[in-house]
Image (tube, rainbow, N blue to C red; front, side):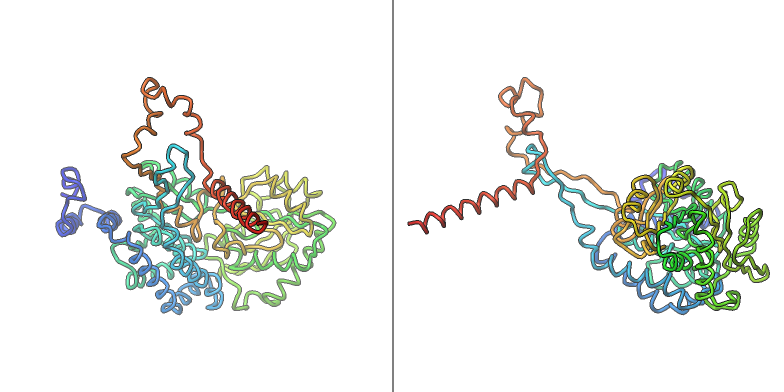
Length: 518
């Protein structure tokens, strides 16, 4: 019935009450996912998500959800990944609250028309960019930070005025359940539904038409998402991963460098998309690097990480077995202990690893840290460039020239010198990959723009027709032919204003001097 309706009448003309009645009658024929998407689209087409007041209200409700349900969120993450309440607050909810605060404060500025430079032909016209909502966005979250990487895109979608269907990862099942049960108590149920389920439910969602798909996960599934989106010419944001290298200069303070690397690598049991995946350093400092990391592991996680409350677990048995298999053929310098019954793998460092080692063939996404020796920065750059572009690249060096050389001669989603992970906390920086590590970006205004259509607008008056004559066929504009090139040139209005102010100040100065001399 619904298919006939959609073919015979436009959705905009179809009454809302009859639309929902038809959905109910067709429930046995339509999948749950299709019903959810149709409802979200219908709700979006009412225009209710577009007013800034509504967007701000929804964002504040989301903030209230995080604040009031902090304990529920922490309990779910603890069951999924063995994270403490402190760790969940630090790595999941604090960033979300900050992101919402920025969006609420600056939303009017982001959504306002953005004037652009004009030519002399359009100098009297209104010429600007108007951000507008895309429509219905599908957000497919990840399990490693089930709240941060799922709700941050939702913040951007709400701020941009879209509807959004949220699909949390089924792997972090406790977090997904809490999100499904509680989020609808705070946000509009029709505009921002949560759909839980596994592969079949995700596949069914991907069969539907969306106006944007935002996926966080691995590149293998990312390709499938992009393939599904291509059937509807739907744009995508793919937040993927890869093997993020970490080069250590022999002249750096190894104590500080290894402390920061140890923290960045083993937080969340290594299950962080921007964690240092492997170390590149010269053979002369490899043993010192190992010893400094050993000290840091002891400092952070004691001599028994397994019983330390703030050391996480691998998400499930499948990933446990995958990570353990990567140890094959490598020399363990630190750790290597495991307990399959608890999905526990201790902080592990591998030395004398080569580019052909098994652990170097895929993103580790676990607490294994291989060390590959290179002769210096030249070989390090070559090693990095011979592989897929990473999501992050880390350099530890006191030499700014060396750091800027790595920036100039490599490509990655982000580059951080002398620290790890912290760029994710800077909302003004775009977060995203390049090449195999992803496409698109988000955080703050970058997310708003990513999930908006930046519409080009020009409003011209109907008078001054003589000035427009140059656009018409040459025989109608002979008198203005000499001015074509000049009038079509781009005008730098800021420069003109500065010149005008300079001329004004010069005239005033001349007048004052002339009066003074009298």
